[in-house]
Length: 482
Image 1 (cartoon, rainbow, N blue to C red):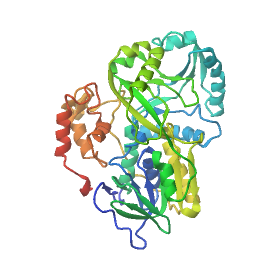
Image 2: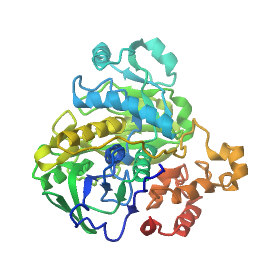
Image 3: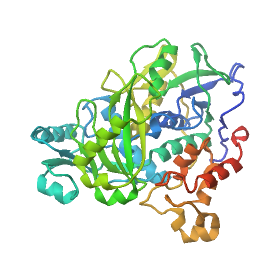
Image 4: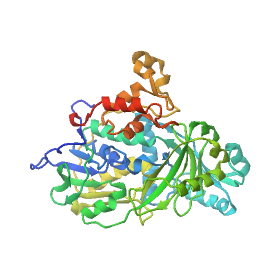
């Protein structure tokens, strides 16, 4: 923690801070603690402002941010000239730098867009030109022979590909948590289990929650799937969110040797389509589907969706279907009727929306945050002099980097790192202990899994579940003291 700077509060129960007295209100309240909201809070923490980050659920990254394909995009295929293209391009550079600084695992595997018919093959030069207009001049069309040499396990019939150097895989869980941790350590108050049910726009704004009323001079909407409904609380109806479900299958680590790059399809009207990609945890993802729904909570998998994925995966990488499946899951993307991000400032309201942030939002998150802060300044918020953030170094969850169970010096200093609890994922008692005592501790076993990988392996907690639960319960309920 930086000298002279207080640590922010983390709460998930009890009354909110009293902001009723004149001058006691927050300067900015950011609503929504997904990857975008956490990034915005961290960016605002650079300034001498009183900031709160509020979240309806019990943890950060509980919505769209926890279930995606975990890719650090280059933005080669964004719509040239769009806000998304600019923010993804800038965000890719910023997030890569931030990952090196904080220990977020990233692997720059590169991607290949595989053409399976003549129409797709003919589209590759057009996609290369689009990439060039987005500032990516290193893409290259590969013939069938070179593609086969690069990816020997591809199914029959691949006619060629567009190689996209720079596409990477990243840990989305650590990214969101790093932003939140650094924001809190730099003075941001994080209020979880704090759903904003009503808003009374004014000077200051009043945000009504079941835990009390928060007053704020400025408000940022980073509500993801609910961004349009929150907009309505401020009298705005600029777009409508349509939840787009993406189902995915996770294959066990034995499948990792089958794929060397991120295997992308030639994109269609519903997005980038079904891909096969390694993860930083050493397993392999197949998905996502793209299903427009009405239900903003429909994160279940379906037999039809999984069958469709297996059919497509069998064409892309036939041997993949012989491997064991570790898990299936589904996430919801925040699609709107527009092709671009819906970021807008409403100066008269002292209100900024960061909506319509789809699958590229993880990559773009640091650039979106900087853009939102600019919009707040344009709306009249006096930012004050910039100051350094509290330093953060996150625990490593990636297989390509040293993990505690392999670190003899660490184990000699602290034997808890030599005691493996989750044998599938090689997670030690020391890692679980530290996660439970961290700046933003988990509020659930799923939250603990996203911080450590415990219970995420092939047995899904059958072996370690009781021990992990016991450690979680022994840690007590740390929230009121934080």
